[in-house]
Length: 290
Image (spheres, rainbow, N blue to C red):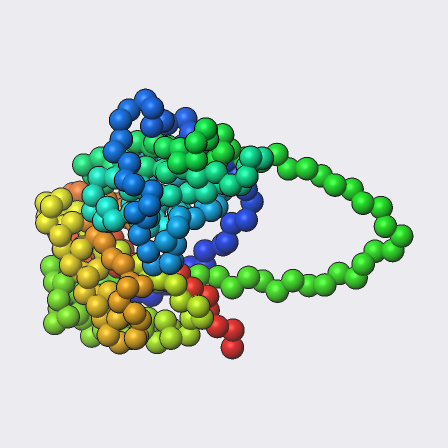
């Protein structure tokens, strides 16, 4: 039997420094045709952004070729148009503050057959906007002020931080249904459900299923998707989270945490690969201080 579940919480620091988008070196919309959706058809997503967003430029700059969908979601959220989580392109509607005022661009990310980012395209919505320039870093200006007496220093409370919860071996081997939950897995899910009730201003929950490399790519992708679906439904039912706030997807075997020797006996490999068989739960909200 596999090892018991492991629950870890990792705080995600909130980025505030404005840095330009590093993907501007990639293809522009003019270099290769991309079918951009009508900007007016932007959807209401889990963050209630029905008119697009002002992206965090530091997070936008971190997007690179080869990244997974889950990694991109961590940086800039889910796509703003109804293209789904399993299609080949994600499109966003971004607004930028420039010297000309607020300018708007669409940003498209294309994925390859392994569901990794390979192409990046911009499409200006505001006439005359050069999207690559609008998303470039702003030069910081140092201002020196001379004062007669220093003001008292007031401690600023640390910002509340969102959380990621990782569940390992929640299901029996090859299982994905509620009936396949291990006793430890069910207990850990109940802990997550209780933890969700302690979050203030909950904006969304994103569940991603992962597998080890045993089995075909298609089988593992389907298995991870089904496990994520089961966990999502469990949290909706037991934590009282609104269904429209919970999104889920499968990553299959594409994001392993560990690699084990291929010459090990299979039982030893299965045990060694335990960290890869996991479900992550990203909570977009802030923990209530007690």
